[in-house]
Image (cartoon, rainbow, N blue to C red; front, top):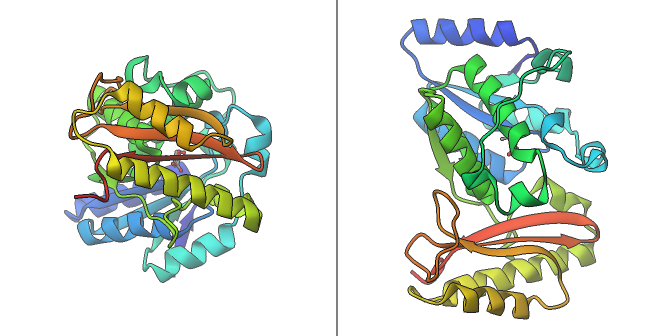
Length: 282
Ligand code: PAF
């Protein structure tokens, strides 16, 4: 049976006790509306940690658009059922006032670099909101490991930078994107699409998969970006970017870790995805 903790102090106490017993803690931060992608994070955490804490918190600080925050699905009962079925015993589901007590005077910022392009440019303040809440969750859960999906690849890199620079002890574990049978990355936003919208989103994801698989090492990035744009003509694109981790700079030519990043809108719903160049071919 899942025990739902809503108080920060209570989570801290529990984790202290677990650590006193010499057991390890794994943190899976989520905003709820859980699906098989989250399930993959949870299962990986369970395989590697003694106690898994799943946090469920729709973080207002990371929404630049109040309508998006309002429309964000909140499905706590179904989430608890999924977590229970996965065998996790502890969920941390604080209220907004508990995690961000008023007045809010402190924000954590990852300045420039990895937080600047793509999502950073499209959603001002978004990564500050993510960095702030992840900092709080890492302080409270004090995990040995924390799990993040590669679907939000830029977020993963921002969190790595945060953890490295603030000397958090936690290891950040990247978990591959989980996709539906048509190759569309699972996202809580997918459930806002009509059947036609879903088909359209799957088509875009398919084009990205094909172009990433076909892209060659040493290919000119300018040409690759242009090919993606041309293949997606008619799609409401937010951005197409080809970039290298860890700083997400745009190389002249593709290398072994280069990725193609995409943000687009279908029926007013904003979706993101990314694929490594050569993914699916090797
Ligand atoms: O990826 C998410 O769901 C959120 O950005 C996170 C990491 C839980 C922080 O609110």
